[in-house]
Image (cartoon, rainbow, N blue to C red; front, side, top):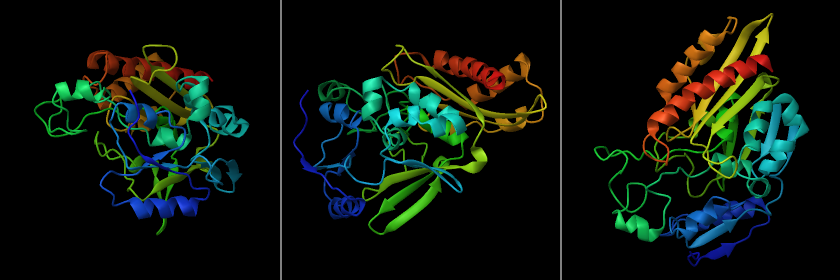
Length: 329
């Protein structure tokens, strides 16, 4: 499958990139931003995106650093997934993030892919991530060119699943993101970045870029675990994913946070998990109860080759295992 025709823009500075986005934001075919290209390029080959302009931001300066600050750690959106995985600072202070990054795709793709790209990853569906010919034969779908959701035909919502690995870890760490445009910057919790809709899944305008991620000092030094279901041991996107962070004191759980991915149109913090665990000694029954809570939040549909029932059950299983592993680390 060949790429559609487009004009390639290659800014060297953030200000130039933002000016180009602002200039072309009103074009009939939206400008697409490429950094690593590991998600965008295959989608363009499938004619899911046919932009008039592609903005290549790989050479924009100042967005690849991972650095300690007085308030925590700041990560540039263009930091590679390999850099996240291998960062001694992150491995020591925010280990759940490095563990999640290490599960993404393959070493080659982690060298190319960026943390910003993983946060902004397009939602996926068995009916959507197909060739143009295949999608045309099915009458298209709500997410692209149609008005029917094939996995929930009676509704008007797109249920394409968000399938990033690092966002659930970042949610557990109470991460915030910086979003920049030619008009200025704004900052928001990562939990507010996602809409919960499979089609318009993120709060990012055509003239905006995600530029930085902030990890607060208050989230440092939590024990962290990430567990991921996929068909193959590498390459594949998660079909269910669980991130857990935990602090213990005198044998009791002082604080814990849990997030899930790949079973909803957005990565989600599991509400009530921290309250259920706080102040208690962990045992199999308590870990199983947390697994039940996570499974109740999971809403997998037939967006992948594995059944929704199996994916929901694996959220339950992986949550129990992750909680026990975090307590033992």
